[in-house]
Length: 427
Ligand SMILES: [Zn+2]
Image 1: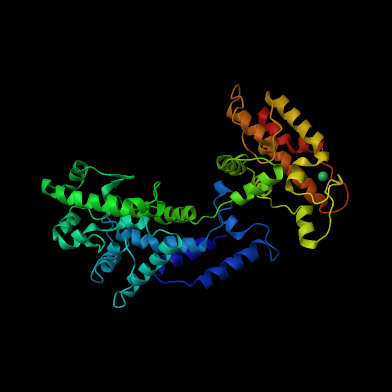
Image 2 (image 1 turned 60 degrees about the horizontal axis):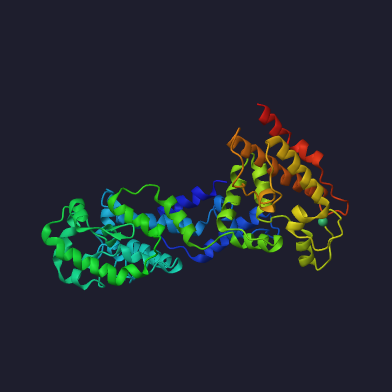
C-alpha cells in the first residue's frame, strides 16, 4: 500500500491547516479496509504503535502531518540551511518566526499567512502533546518578553551573529554549559561573562524546574538544528510524536497478567513484543506470533460477551467461558501437549526450558539459557520451535473454526510443522 507517500507528499508540500474531521474520515476508511467492514479486533491506535512496542506500525496520518509541518519550523532554526523559501519566511513580520517557537504563540493577523498558519499548527501541537514547559528551551534570550534583560540590553543580539541564539544552545543535556565552553564554541569575549550569568540565572530560576528530566525528543530535533544541518527530520519528529502521544500496549500486558495471575515487568513485555518481530523471517509466523500476543483471536469468552451465550472451550474440556490463557495454556487437554513439546525441545537443545507461560506462550527469552556450544543459534532455533507451537495450535483452531468437534492439538502436528527447524539445524 503506497498510501503514506502520497499523503506525505501533500502534507509536506502544502502549508495549510487540515481539520480533524478529515483525519477521522481517512482513519475510518483505512480501518474499514483493514477489517473488511467487520468489527475491529484490535484498537486502531494500537495498530499505529511501532512494531517493537507491540503494534503494526500502521501510519498515523495526523502525526505525519504534524511532523511534515514541523519540518519547516526546524529549518527555520537551522542557520546552515540555505533555501530561498526560508529566507522569505524569516523576513516576514517584525520578529523572525523561530524566535516565537519558545513561548505562547500569539497570532499576528497582519503577518504572512503561511508563517502564521504554521505557527498555529505549532500551537496546536504544543497543547496536544503538553510541550508548554519543554519548548521554553527554544526561547531566544535576546528577544523574549519573559527575559526582560535581553529585551533591554541590545548587546545580547550580538551573540546571534556568533551563532548563539536559543537557550537550548547553552545546555549540554541537562547541564548548563560552562562559560569557557561557550566562549570557545561561539567565540564569546570575557566581557560577556556577566550576560552569561544573567542567562544562567534566568534558566535556573524560571526554566529548569518545568522541563522533563529525560529531555523531550521533539524539542531535541529543534535544538540540534541550531548547530547541525537537520536530516531525516520527518522521521525523527514522527517517532518523537509517537513516543509522546501516550499510546501503548500495556493494557494488553495487564490482561495477560490478570488471566495468568502473574506479574511482568514493562521490560519483559517489550522484549516479548520484539521477539514476535525477530524470531523468524516468515511473515506468516510473525503475524501469528503477534496475533497471539495481542489477543487477536476470538475466544469463547469473547463470544459469550458478544452474544450472551455460554460457549464451551474449543477443545471440549468442559470449561465454559474459556479466555486466551485457557485456550493456549491452561486447558487441561493441553497439559500433556506442552509437556511433550518442552521435553522434545529440551532434548534437542540440551537444556531444560522452564514450563512458564511467559516463555512458552508469550515469547520471553529466558535470561539464563546456556550459550554454549551453539550460542545464539540455539536460542533462535529453540525459539522458532516454540513459536511454531503456538502457530500450529492456532492453525488447528482456525481450521476447525468454532465447530463443536473436538480440537486436537498433537505433538505430531507440531513436529510436522517444525520440520523446517530440523532441516535448518542439519544445514
Ligand atoms: Zn479447555
